[in-house]
Image (spheres, rainbow, N blue to C red):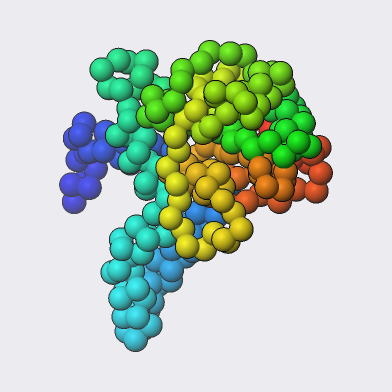
Length: 260
């Protein structure tokens, strides 16, 4: 009768690991649309169990069929999140303890950063007045080391003069993207993956597609200046983020860099 309390050490460890996993999944999805989907799936599962207990065979059968394809549905719904996770694992340097622990930043709910957002945005404002194209990628939790090697390494503290000089039309560094990590410009002339999303309007060029492409594969945010119109765009989670004015843009970027 007391077999249910006959736990081994491995059983206890198993329960603890599952609890930790669920906790970090919640932290990873907290504040995103994905958490609402998880809640919805949980509600359907509970209703299914209730209908089974009440022997409501027709409804429980329908819900059972829906949940039986849940794995495939989750892969489709969370395609971008799974891609980002696998990309993070694939680019982790397991040879060093520091490299591995740095990649585990995706488990953090907050990103500790002192990035000078004002200087970044103000430099884009100056570039927009002359319709000088620019593409700035700001790293969050997913490391972008796999992209740095495609460009020129740099180690310069963020400031308006440097950013504007990088994207100056006659500068040898203006092509490609610039990557910022922890308030340092770590690479320029970086080649980004271009999105093949057919829903992107035709009026957006290669620079916009590249920004959306990296946002599809990582959690980085991008600020870019259109060379044709001088318009400043902000891209997060592979979507254009709307803002009223430059002050609101600065606040949105700061918020995205301090909370996840």
